[in-house]
Image 1: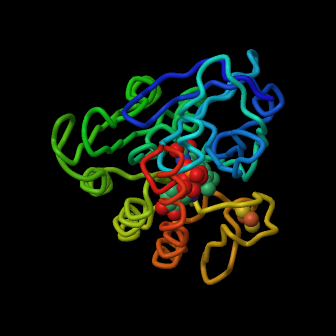
Image 2: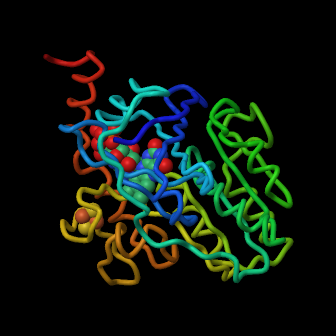
Amino acid sequence: MYKIVAKRELAKDINEYVIQAPLVAKNAKPGQFIILRVDKEGERVPFTICDMNKVLGTITILVQTIGASTAKLAFLGAGDSIEDFVGPLGNATDLTEYDKVMLVGGGIGGAVIYPQAKLLHRIGKSPVTVMGARNRSLLLYEEEMRNHSERFYPMTDDGSYGEKGFVTNKVKELLENEKFDAILAVGPLPMMEAVCKVSKDYEVKTIVSMNSIMVDGTGMCGCCRVTVGGKTLYACVDGPEFDGQLIDFAEAKARSKFYKDFEQDHFCRIRGTGPK
Ligand SMILES: Cc1cc2nc3c(=O)[nH]c(=O)nc-3n(C[C@H](O)[C@H](O)[C@H](O)COP(=O)(O)OP(=O)(O)OC[C@H]3O[C@@H](n4cnc5c(N)ncnc54)[C@H](O)[C@@H]3O)c2cc1C
Ligand code: FES
């Protein structure tokens, strides 16, 4: 069992959990993820490692409640335990070789780029960060990202904070005026696709994180497959981060909706709002 040592509500339906998992914390690197099962009957659900404390043996994840497993997790609090917790999984992304990096986060992706900002800041290569959200209340980890960025640009769809507009507006403006060696964009698929379209014109390497639907997380089931440069790869073992210019986003978007109706029914039952 893996103990939740702290839980914080960051926004409506978005919670941060600090979990005691010393071995995972010891080995975790930016870009990697864990798979957990809330209870014995639970599905295996993947979450990006947003922070790790190797001394205390904890890792931090941010969870958006969107379906059955995340709803079950939302019922747990500090002191409760999680049944299974496997990681770190996937490949770490090393951005330290680049001199000037832009980090772009959308929605919950704004927080999962935090370990990269921390690492780059520590080695004296603080990134330029663009973070977007629908409104101010959904802009996550702002202080953490500000403190580890050379410059920080908040963007909101409704203009309630920072500049009004999509992250791509700011990405384009920055690329027009400065040279970047790499971009890491993490967020919803349409956002990552849009960033790649913009950065293509400026020939800047753009890495994206593919949050494909996963089952086993070991490369066996094929569920998380992504087409990258015409080749079939698996987000769990080959990713989750890939060269965004090579991703077949149309296929990825279609695959992400595969289980929508089935999952929605399950979600409603757990929240007590659906058919019994
Ligand atoms: C490598 C990786 C890292 C992730 N990191 C995070 C994270 O840090 N924080 C976070 O909140 N979520 C993250 N996710 C997504 C998270 O795993 C899903 O939200 C979760 O599995 C949903 O489980 P559920 O049972 O609550 O919802 P479900 O009932 O399974 O799904 C609800 C709805 O969301 C859709 N859905 C489910 N999983 C995904 C997915 N992976 N991508 C797109 N749509 C999906 C379903 O089709 C359905 O419409 C990550 C996914 C991957 C693969
Ligand atoms: S989750 Fe099964 S192959 Fe990746």
